[in-house]
Image 1 (cartoon, rainbow, N blue to C red):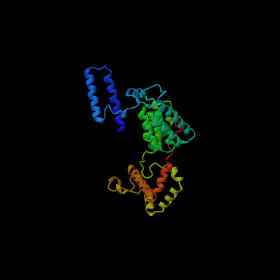
Image 2 (image 1 turned 30 degrees about the vertical axis):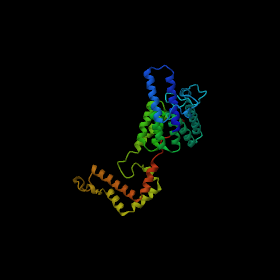
Image 3 (image 1 turned 180 degrees about the vertical axis):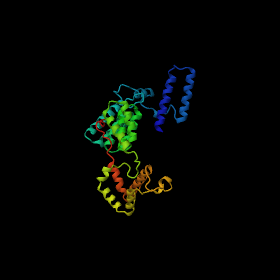
Image 4 (image 1 turned 90 degrees about the horizontal axis):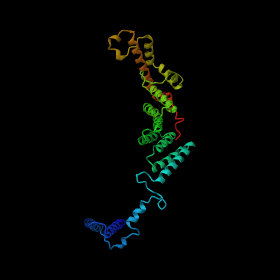
Amino acid sequence: MADTKHIAFSIIQFLRDQLSSGGLSSDAQESLEVAIQCLETTFGISVDDQNLAVSQSLPELFAFATKQTGTTQENTFVTTGSPYEHQLAEAERLKTDGNDQMKVENFSAAVEFYSKAIQLNPQNAVYFCNRAAAYSKLGNYAGAVQDCERAIGIDANYSKAYGRMGLALASLNKYSEAVSYYKKALELDPDNDTYKVNLQVAEQKVKETQPSTAGGLGGVDLAGLLSNPGFMNMASNLMNNPQVQQLVSGMMSGSYSPVSSATSPTAAGAGGGGANDLSSLIQAGQQFAQQMQQQNPELIEQLRSQMRSRPPSSAGNDEP
């Protein structure tokens, strides 16, 4: 409250100086007198309280605060609302330090430098995009996605932010979303070969991860299955199962008839032909796959993971 009274006292002094200048009309002088009385009543002070006086008058304090030379005030504020000039320069220096740390693969230190630069200038899309690259190197793909979103929000035409967003999403196995961001990156930078390659890889991944119509193992290739000892052992055990033996025998003899088709007139005939045989074969395969899933679900999941290739390479696209 003491500081508030000092400020109010300085304002009252300024208003009294304006009254004594003689350059105001009678109406203006009357208005100032009313204003002075209101301030004195509100803050419980008067012009006689000289202990509230400060060494500089209000105009002097104002002139000092708005001085633009920089010789007496190092941190000059730009009136447009942008950060201090020295803060902008410091932020650029921190970004350069972060880039140097990326070159020596000290990604944690790079994140720290980029974060400090962002604190000084949060309206620079490059800082967020560079930190996204560092986050990706550390495996923090969710953090990379957030930083890319911030960068795009600042600069919607920043192609590198879209490219790095595609990388982060692909690393999270979100290939469909990655495709859309790679396409936008190429739209803004059509000659970028890295974006072209990564787009092709992501589109291929989308095709590979489409659900299989045969059900059960969902996209695991036959060569991969046959080369997996665990799968072959499980298949051997299943073949010794009487229920499975009966199922295979029925498939081989053509007499297998799914329960779901028992009520269909076209499926009632023994060894029916055409589409019904194909349907029966597919359903028999599904039943076989389901029994494998029930016997060893962990192995089936492991097989799925082994058949998924790694996300697209970020080579040539991570230099800030």
